[in-house]
Length: 205
Image (cartoon, rainbow, N blue to C red; front, side):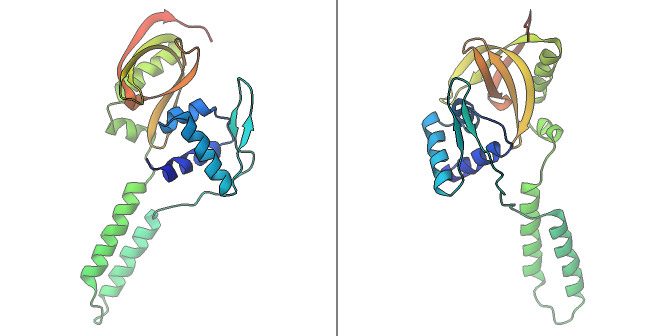
């Protein structure tokens, strides 16, 4: 994604009033921690101030609400346009049928591309369903999971994790899990997990 897109995505994340560490944001946005700090600076240049909490459990938090702009067209916009077109066609002086049809198709295409999908829809459209089922079972039974995932540099990396939560963000499924190697909670994109195996060993909360 572009720098502007990543900055807006970071703002959207922080808008849920949750504290994020720089490392967490870097992993979600798939950039370096240095870039996350640059995004923070850019937001503050635009008058959106992000609070920094220091210490080992610190991070960034947005202490005030920010109204994010809504983009795209709604289903109502498309229906209104189509109904207006049907009325205009009844007028003998209306000579822009082809142009109007192209406009309707364009607006309808934009609406469909930005329409919010459900988590089940996203799972059905991707190869994540099996991974989601394994992780759900692991969370329910408190079982460890072995994963092989692609890092930012596209190299495969193996980890043993303790899955604790599955969440949907920006039309992509993630799992929050304790990583035994790093000794901390990490967020793994299901799209980046190329191999997964449910282990017999249990973990404690």
